Image (cartoon, rainbow, N blue to C red):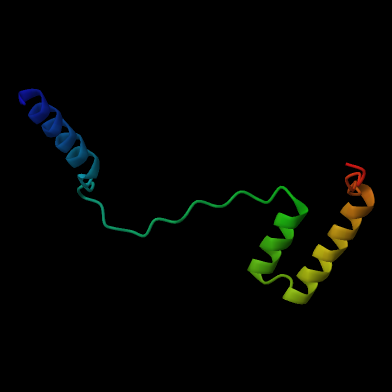
Length: 86
């Protein structure tokens, strides 16, 4: 029984320590922290998406470029259909 109470007490202590708010630095005025810059996209699809979200291209241009990329990918790497003889 005593062991159970000690374990429950330790779990509560660890939970409280994890959820306890960190103290603010004194002497500093609260300022809005800027979000870190996202890394640039590494794929063509990612580049197109970032251009769409930033307003550099519209939805029609995005869809046309995605269709062009899909056609190019299908030409370079065609899908092999499974054999029907199984």
